[in-house]
Length: 173
Image: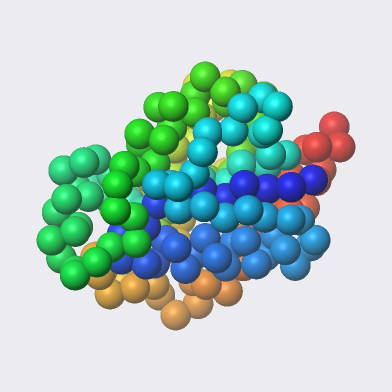
């Protein structure tokens, strides 16, 4: 079993969560290739990983758009993701998603009114025939540019370990 983890991150919080999730998968000996969405290729049926993990920041209650990414780029001197985001990457991936085991996460402000990029990613992938091995997961940021709550990286690593177990069980079916 091997995993591909693709993420979008503007201010670095989602990238930090992606690294923690990858570490959790690696804790249980799941090899992980981690890619920022701008350099991630589209897996084909012949190159698809056993598990695809996709993460993105929540922008205006859902996935980022070109407009929200441009606004984010105006907040800081340099962002992690500089081109297209997960939304555009998913548009290219859906033709290859049928039967793919996936897990999704996001970073978002606290509260049910904040929305969730992870739910949007999960919905797009399951409509294309992918199979979620766990429900979408959100990790909480304190503000647009201020970072994660104190325990979120440990939570992300723990989620990665759980994800390894659920993915292994799904693959065994």
